[in-house]
Amino acid sequence: MPSLRIRLMLAVSLAILVIAAPLPAQSAKPSTPQAVAAEIDAHIQKKLAKEKTPASPNADDAEYLRRTFLLATGRLPTPDRVLSFLESKEADKRQKVAEELLASPKFGDHLASYWSQLITAEEPKYRKELGKWLTEEFNKNSPWSRIVSDLVTHEGSGPKIGFVMSNVDNNQPQPNKLAGSTARLFLGVQLQCAECHNHPFTTWKQNDFWGMAAFYSRVKFTKPIQAKGKDVTLGIAEAVATTAKGKKDPVKPGAYIVIPTTAGKNAGKVISAKLLEGDEPKLPSDGAVRGNLADWMTAPGNKFFAKAFVNRMWSHFLGRGIVHPVDDMHDDNTPIHPEVLQLLTDEFKASNYDVKHLVRCILATQAYQRTSRPLEGNKDDPVLNSHQNVQVMNPEVLYDALVQAFGVTQIKLSTSASTAGAATGRPVVTTAARDRFIKAFSTSDADAEPTDYTHGIPQALTLMNDPAFNYGGPSVDALMKANKEPANVIEGLFLATLSRRPTSDETKLMTDYLARRSDRRQGYAGVLWILVNTEEFVLIR
Image: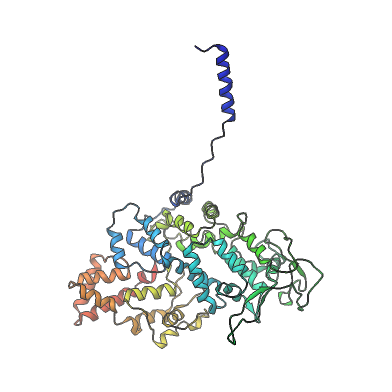
């Protein structure tokens, strides 16, 4: 047995080891989409229990697949893809679908369409080129922070000029428009409400608005680039800060702006560049200063930037933002699930603004995967995520869905139909069949609520009466060639439009309809016409 002295030495050594040992590490923040989703769902379930609101069950596989394809890529799943998914017994098949769609080039294309429309709402002629660039960036999974920084700080020409060029007046970039667009699109706040006076619903002052605008006070057009005697695109660059009269002002160092007479109150006042709810940074009197604004926006400590994008993506996939409206985030507009918004914001920052990781986390939640069919106890709930909100296909998605359903390369509307939406005021470029369709079905602003059904009588009549939709298409011919049994053709048409098999009652109804038609092909064309004119086809459930 060890002596008392040895035992004392051992005890002292053990005590030293215990004291010196590091404290147990704090539990790591969830980093897998499934772990993040589980925490999100726990918060939402707690809120539902508090409000005594039941949650609808999971969507069935067909509902989930169609919804996810449309929201992630803007395209319908092919009939073969629907069948393979319905027949799969894999426990993780929904997770695999999410990965499949995030890897698809259509993911970047669809997300780029959404953002390019928002950014170029005032100048749609820049939409196409900006959209191509955004598509590449989203498909490469470039960090959202870098994408926004590139848009805000861009000099020269090229597709990234679209952000500045969409905020132009009198042939010059407008600092006030650029400040308002920056705040609304990238920070989720309606700062432009403080342009002429203090904000009526927040603590933001007129000086806060013009302090942000001052970061854009030096943005000017460069001279057109000459190429073989022809003017090419205008470029943008930074210049020395000037007064409203256009002369160099030696009074105030750094970056500043003079409040114009059009802004009413405090016209003529000189405002230094100031970060929203932040300081006046020390800036040079010459050269670029937009980089300072971009650095502040995309810094992990910024309380607006990451949260604004998270809220928009939640709205895109669930039909309503955690803060609603998505571009009016302020202290008095409280989030419906504050813990969820903060959790996803922290995760988005921790992932270095990884867009695909954020989407993975959202798609993995039970909140996203619920059916859109409400229960008696939650049918009046549009906000708690007790069931999926039904969304409306925007014109671009509807056009592509119709092209898929009919098996054609394009859909040419008649002249009268193509002007149906011309009075809505939504700017679109009309250069091809797709653009003409989009013009006819553009009945709302680019940033309209995704759950608002804005199509009216002209759009309904177009789908019902335009020749493009009344004679079937190659999809009908292919199904008739491959199948002799009417039930098989009917099933193929359901898969091509509603992304599901018909019920037995639907099969009987359509079979009876066909029996009353002397021309079998015209009968199948009628079935296709019926299906594309259903609510189920034009809605995302």
